[in-house]
Length: 220
Image 1: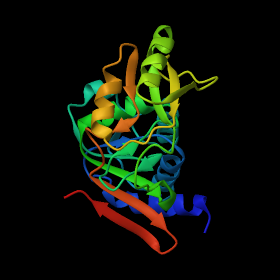
Image 2 (image 1 turned 90 degrees about the vertical axis):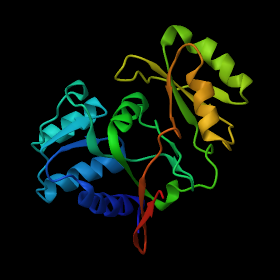
Image 3 (image 1 turned 180 degrees about the vertical axis):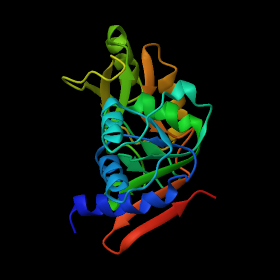
Image 4 (image 1 turned 135 degrees about the vertical axis):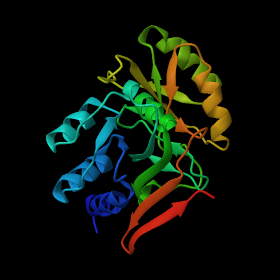
Protein backbone atom coordinates (compact mmCIF):
# COMPACT_ATOMS: atom_id res chain seq x y z
CA UNK A 1 0.00 0.00 0.00
CA UNK A 2 1.41 3.39 -1.00
CA UNK A 3 1.70 6.38 1.31
CA UNK A 4 -0.90 8.15 -0.81
CA UNK A 5 -3.35 5.30 -0.26
CA UNK A 6 -2.70 5.44 3.49
CA UNK A 7 -3.46 9.17 3.46
CA UNK A 8 -6.77 8.57 1.70
CA UNK A 9 -7.62 5.85 4.23
CA UNK A 10 -7.05 8.06 7.28
CA UNK A 11 -8.74 11.03 5.60
CA UNK A 12 -11.87 8.94 5.10
CA UNK A 13 -11.81 7.85 8.75
CA UNK A 14 -11.58 11.47 9.89
CA UNK A 15 -14.95 12.22 8.30
CA UNK A 16 -16.54 10.63 11.40
CA UNK A 17 -15.24 13.53 13.52
CA UNK A 18 -16.90 16.31 11.54
CA UNK A 19 -19.50 18.02 13.78
CA UNK A 20 -23.05 17.77 12.46
CA UNK A 21 -24.02 21.30 13.45
CA UNK A 22 -21.02 23.47 14.11
CA UNK A 23 -17.81 24.99 12.82
CA UNK A 24 -15.00 22.69 11.71
CA UNK A 25 -11.35 23.71 11.94
CA UNK A 26 -9.26 22.52 8.98
CA UNK A 27 -5.48 22.48 8.83
CA UNK A 28 -3.02 22.20 5.95
CA UNK A 29 -0.81 19.72 4.16
CA UNK A 30 -1.10 16.73 1.84
CA UNK A 31 -3.19 14.56 4.18
CA UNK A 32 -5.60 17.42 4.80
CA UNK A 33 -5.95 17.84 1.03
CA UNK A 34 -7.14 14.22 0.92
CA UNK A 35 -9.51 14.94 3.81
CA UNK A 36 -11.09 17.86 1.97
CA UNK A 37 -11.41 15.73 -1.17
CA UNK A 38 -13.22 13.07 0.86
CA UNK A 39 -15.65 15.66 2.24
CA UNK A 40 -16.59 16.54 -1.32
CA UNK A 41 -16.67 12.99 -2.69
CA UNK A 42 -18.89 11.78 0.14
CA UNK A 43 -21.13 14.87 0.21
CA UNK A 44 -20.53 15.40 3.93
CA UNK A 45 -22.38 18.50 5.17
CA UNK A 46 -20.17 21.09 6.86
CA UNK A 47 -22.01 24.05 8.36
CA UNK A 48 -18.92 26.28 8.26
CA UNK A 49 -15.17 26.02 8.56
CA UNK A 50 -12.18 28.02 9.72
CA UNK A 51 -9.03 27.50 7.68
CA UNK A 52 -5.31 27.55 8.46
CA UNK A 53 -4.08 28.59 5.02
CA UNK A 54 -5.04 30.31 1.81
CA UNK A 55 -4.73 27.01 -0.06
CA UNK A 56 -7.03 25.22 2.40
CA UNK A 57 -9.59 28.02 2.06
CA UNK A 58 -9.49 27.70 -1.72
CA UNK A 59 -10.01 23.92 -1.60
CA UNK A 60 -12.87 24.16 0.91
CA UNK A 61 -14.67 26.83 -1.07
CA UNK A 62 -14.23 24.78 -4.24
CA UNK A 63 -16.38 21.99 -2.72
CA UNK A 64 -18.94 24.48 -1.44
CA UNK A 65 -17.90 24.85 2.21
CA UNK A 66 -18.51 28.26 3.78
CA UNK A 67 -15.17 29.45 5.21
CA UNK A 68 -15.46 32.04 7.99
CA UNK A 69 -12.84 34.24 9.62
CA UNK A 70 -11.48 32.92 12.95
CA UNK A 71 -12.09 36.35 14.50
CA UNK A 72 -15.84 35.78 14.02
CA UNK A 73 -15.76 32.47 15.93
CA UNK A 74 -15.50 32.30 19.72
CA UNK A 75 -14.47 28.66 19.69
CA UNK A 76 -15.44 25.37 18.08
CA UNK A 77 -15.52 21.65 18.74
CA UNK A 78 -13.11 19.94 16.33
CA UNK A 79 -9.89 20.83 14.53
CA UNK A 80 -8.52 18.29 12.02
CA UNK A 81 -4.95 18.51 10.77
CA UNK A 82 -1.89 16.45 9.92
CA UNK A 83 1.60 16.46 11.41
CA UNK A 84 5.20 15.88 10.38
CA UNK A 85 5.99 13.88 13.54
CA UNK A 86 3.93 12.51 16.44
CA UNK A 87 5.47 11.16 19.66
CA UNK A 88 3.85 8.72 22.16
CA UNK A 89 2.76 11.64 24.38
CA UNK A 90 0.70 13.33 21.62
CA UNK A 91 3.34 16.04 21.09
CA UNK A 92 3.77 17.07 17.47
CA UNK A 93 6.08 18.75 15.01
CA UNK A 94 4.13 20.70 12.41
CA UNK A 95 5.01 23.33 9.84
CA UNK A 96 6.44 21.43 6.90
CA UNK A 97 3.85 23.28 4.85
CA UNK A 98 4.73 26.64 6.44
CA UNK A 99 1.29 27.16 8.03
CA UNK A 100 2.33 26.55 11.65
CA UNK A 101 1.27 29.90 13.11
CA UNK A 102 -2.27 29.79 11.78
CA UNK A 103 -2.48 26.11 12.68
CA UNK A 104 -1.46 26.90 16.24
CA UNK A 105 -4.08 29.65 16.49
CA UNK A 106 -6.84 27.34 15.27
CA UNK A 107 -5.67 24.54 17.55
CA UNK A 108 -5.90 26.86 20.56
CA UNK A 109 -9.53 27.66 19.71
CA UNK A 110 -10.75 24.07 19.42
CA UNK A 111 -12.08 21.71 22.08
CA UNK A 112 -10.62 18.64 20.33
CA UNK A 113 -7.62 18.35 18.03
CA UNK A 114 -7.78 15.29 15.78
CA UNK A 115 -4.44 14.60 14.12
CA UNK A 116 -4.48 12.50 10.93
CA UNK A 117 -1.27 10.84 9.74
CA UNK A 118 0.11 7.67 8.24
CA UNK A 119 2.23 5.30 10.31
CA UNK A 120 5.52 6.84 9.06
CA UNK A 121 4.88 9.96 11.15
CA UNK A 122 4.99 8.11 14.49
CA UNK A 123 8.31 8.50 16.32
CA UNK A 124 9.66 7.75 19.78
CA UNK A 125 11.37 11.15 20.07
CA UNK A 126 10.69 14.30 18.07
CA UNK A 127 13.43 15.96 16.05
CA UNK A 128 14.43 13.83 13.08
CA UNK A 129 12.14 16.03 10.99
CA UNK A 130 13.65 19.56 10.97
CA UNK A 131 11.76 21.80 13.41
CA UNK A 132 10.13 24.77 11.62
CA UNK A 133 10.33 28.20 13.25
CA UNK A 134 8.46 31.11 11.69
CA UNK A 135 10.41 34.35 12.06
CA UNK A 136 10.02 38.04 11.29
CA UNK A 137 12.50 38.62 8.43
CA UNK A 138 14.47 41.43 10.13
CA UNK A 139 15.10 39.14 13.13
CA UNK A 140 16.12 36.04 11.19
CA UNK A 141 19.82 36.06 12.14
CA UNK A 142 19.13 37.00 15.78
CA UNK A 143 16.81 34.02 16.01
CA UNK A 144 19.27 31.76 14.17
CA UNK A 145 22.03 32.55 16.67
CA UNK A 146 19.73 31.76 19.58
CA UNK A 147 18.70 28.48 17.98
CA UNK A 148 22.34 27.49 17.53
CA UNK A 149 22.87 28.18 21.23
CA UNK A 150 20.09 25.66 21.92
CA UNK A 151 22.01 23.02 19.95
CA UNK A 152 20.22 23.26 16.61
CA UNK A 153 21.35 24.00 13.08
CA UNK A 154 18.87 26.49 11.59
CA UNK A 155 18.59 26.65 7.79
CA UNK A 156 16.55 29.26 5.94
CA UNK A 157 13.79 27.65 3.85
CA UNK A 158 14.65 29.14 0.48
CA UNK A 159 11.86 30.77 -1.49
CA UNK A 160 9.35 30.37 1.34
CA UNK A 161 7.26 33.32 2.47
CA UNK A 162 4.37 32.37 4.74
CA UNK A 163 0.79 33.59 4.41
CA UNK A 164 1.77 36.00 7.20
CA UNK A 165 4.65 37.50 5.19
CA UNK A 166 7.32 35.84 7.32
CA UNK A 167 10.20 33.39 6.78
CA UNK A 168 10.86 29.85 8.01
CA UNK A 169 13.99 28.54 9.66
CA UNK A 170 14.16 24.74 9.64
CA UNK A 171 16.17 23.58 12.65
CA UNK A 172 18.15 20.39 12.11
CA UNK A 173 20.00 18.22 14.62
CA UNK A 174 17.64 18.45 17.58
CA UNK A 175 16.77 15.49 19.81
CA UNK A 176 13.67 16.85 21.52
CA UNK A 177 13.32 15.06 24.85
CA UNK A 178 11.28 17.83 26.52
CA UNK A 179 9.04 19.35 23.84
CA UNK A 180 7.13 21.64 26.22
CA UNK A 181 10.25 23.33 27.62
CA UNK A 182 11.80 23.73 24.15
CA UNK A 183 8.55 25.18 22.79
CA UNK A 184 8.58 27.79 25.57
CA UNK A 185 12.27 28.60 25.06
CA UNK A 186 11.96 29.13 21.31
CA UNK A 187 8.74 31.11 21.53
CA UNK A 188 10.50 33.48 23.97
CA UNK A 189 13.21 34.44 21.43
CA UNK A 190 12.61 37.96 20.07
CA UNK A 191 11.75 37.74 16.38
CA UNK A 192 10.04 34.35 16.60
CA UNK A 193 6.42 34.32 15.50
CA UNK A 194 5.95 30.74 16.63
CA UNK A 195 7.65 27.36 16.62
CA UNK A 196 6.23 24.21 15.05
CA UNK A 197 6.25 22.31 18.35
CA UNK A 198 2.74 21.47 19.50
CA UNK A 199 3.35 20.37 23.09
CA UNK A 200 1.54 22.92 25.25
CA UNK A 201 -1.45 21.94 23.13
CA UNK A 202 -0.91 18.68 21.34
CA UNK A 203 -3.49 16.34 19.86
CA UNK A 204 -6.33 14.74 21.82
CA UNK A 205 -6.82 12.07 19.15
CA UNK A 206 -4.33 10.62 16.67
CA UNK A 207 -5.62 8.62 13.72
CA UNK A 208 -2.85 6.80 11.89
CA UNK A 209 -3.17 4.64 8.82
CA UNK A 210 -1.50 1.25 8.47
CA UNK A 211 -1.82 -1.60 5.98
CA UNK A 212 -4.15 -3.21 8.55
CA UNK A 213 -6.46 -0.21 8.75
CA UNK A 214 -6.68 3.03 10.70
CA UNK A 215 -5.62 2.91 14.36
CA UNK A 216 -6.88 5.34 16.99
CA UNK A 217 -4.88 6.77 19.88
CA UNK A 218 -6.74 8.89 22.43
CA UNK A 219 -5.24 11.04 25.16
CA UNK A 220 -6.45 9.95 28.61
